[in-house]
Image (cartoon, rainbow, N blue to C red):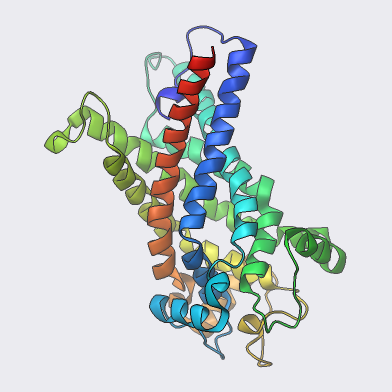
Length: 333
């Protein structure tokens, strides 16, 4: 990806430029779908841990939580909401990777126009900025899907109200709660995505560049890194990004549950008092007040187990699919 961020010396033909865009979008979409499906049970457990009512704890940890889901809902319960998640993450990932490449080119072009920077290359800070731009664009473009995905993931067979699928959930929320409800939790999501996506791209690309340049332990051969090494770089990037941004992910999930009529019991607590939130700051304040600072990291363990391989798989899948599509396009030419 770093090589694609460099401005081209000459203008590309329109057809070649269109193929390049399609290649980036397809590779990003495939990367998102593969990486999320691989860790779907952990993704669902993370959300359940984040939003469950503190007076009616059903999920107390990663192993216990996965066992409980398997026991009460079976195999299908492990992947509940994954269809919605993939419907959201495929376009989200496609837009995110494509936006990162375009933002990298634009930011580098602006940076090189400064006196003395004519031969400059992307730095970790510039990559951080490009990743932040990509995260904001992708999150905003697909946020309503993320909002209803959270609710579909939380509901169980015993939930009073059943959303029948993505479009039913979208139409129901729109009709009963208004269009603004589809963007509940958008602000903390955007604030959180800036360090999360920004650090993911920055750490991954910078770490790869460093390994290629320094060649520690003979890891890089002929300026190429193995799949295993790239997976390790992606895992490091995912660990850093999600640890920094995780509290904001908890806040947005709780905000997304506000206004849900006949909400799932994991949210209401089987008839017990349900805390209502009026905004991002209020959600943060009440969460800390009633449950302590540790509540901001509820679900961190399953999320870490999920995010580390997920980010690694996404980066490597993206690069591999782009390479495959690149070869096929050259053959067809």
